[in-house]
Length: 145
Image (cartoon, rainbow, N blue to C red; front, side, top):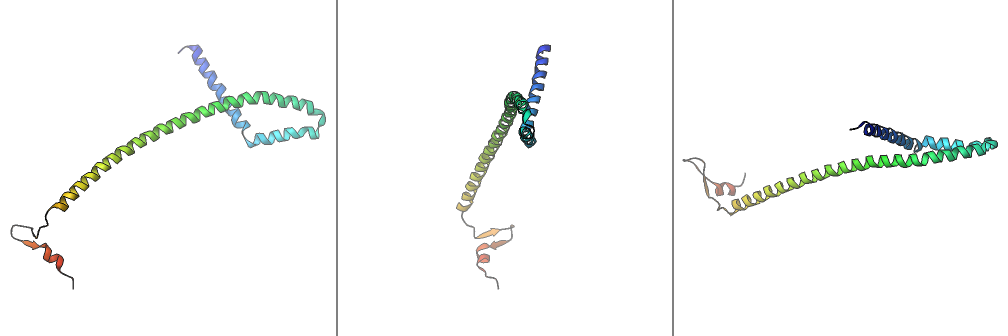
């Protein structure tokens, strides 16, 4: 990177920083209070009215472009954050879709296995070992005392 580009980038960062600070300052309630007091000065000292009008015009000439630049810089930051948020949400959505597909596959497998189990014939006697048989039907038919 050449020295001129480095200087230009540094100058742009300084200018943008000043514009943002001015935007924040002019957007504060304290600035509203200051301009309110400034606007009431001619009431107290009428002979300063022309000077104060000149000063207020100068403030407007400087403040308007600074506010425009500051707003532009702030909106670029907001746009960048919105893009990052969008990318994160797209990744989350992709993960959710993958999980949903896995869940559907798992659920389909459960349904298949459940259907197979329900289609098996019912056994009357179950062998626990080679020597013992339990009659399932007769145990289920018994009522507790």
